[in-house]
Image (tube, rainbow, N blue to C red; front, side):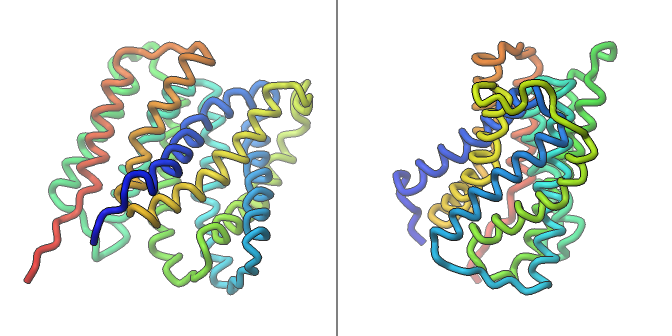
Amino acid sequence: MQAAPLRAWIFPFTIAAVAWGSSFLFIELALQSFSPSHVAFGRVAVGALVLMGMVIAARHIPRFTWRDVAAVGLIAVCLSGAPFILIPWAQQSITSILASLLNATVPLWTALFVALWIPTERATRTQVVGLLIGVLGIAVLLGAWNVENFPLLGAVLMLSATAFYGVGSTLSRMLLTRVKESHTSVSALQVSLSALFLAPFALAAGSPGEGAFDISGWALWGLVLLGALGTSFAYVMFWRVIAVAGATAGASVTYVVPIVATILGIAILGEELLWYEPVGAVIVLLGVWLSGRRPSATNT
């Protein structure tokens, strides 16, 4: 099969990488007036509206069975439910840069759960080595030797979020093969169900802080952009990359998102990049690359 030309997928790839990389900046801005639960619900509410608009514009009425809705609902809790609360909660105690670098561990969790739950894809020796290298990279990334300033709470929350992503990604491969609707329709259903799941948490969090709904305030615009770009449009672009260039090109977004987030964290938020954070990130991404390698198919 001939590879797709670069110009056919580089634009949607760039949009997805920038949208997801800027999500950590938008979360930081939203947290100025909104609680983590408000941020989580607000982003999926906005994202659901955008995705539903795309579905309506396509003039196609999706037909989901109750089994489809149950499967997508379970995946929604793992991919756009629990993590969307845990990440802003984590960013209350760690920088957006560190959050984005820890977010790069998602493929490690996915490789682990795939190996555990999908019998036909047991981990190879190379993948096990990749997982171990990834664990080492996390330790370096967090500065594990710096006991006094170790960001324990933020690290636990962020790694819990990425573990949920890993579970959700694995369940997607197991449960969504029977769903025949478009990726946009499935994403719209997923994000809408996430909004229903997160609504009670947002209500329990009480009223947002002062200036939350100020049209000229950064917090409100951070929340709107987080939902419109990072929770809806980015997914459409990501699936377009996979459709045109394949899963390998799509997965490579993992390597670009932390770079975008780091640049924005330094340039806009004035955050400090500690020397061991990029070192640990490189080790983590090496582990990600190794853990994602599959045995080459051979001709018989």
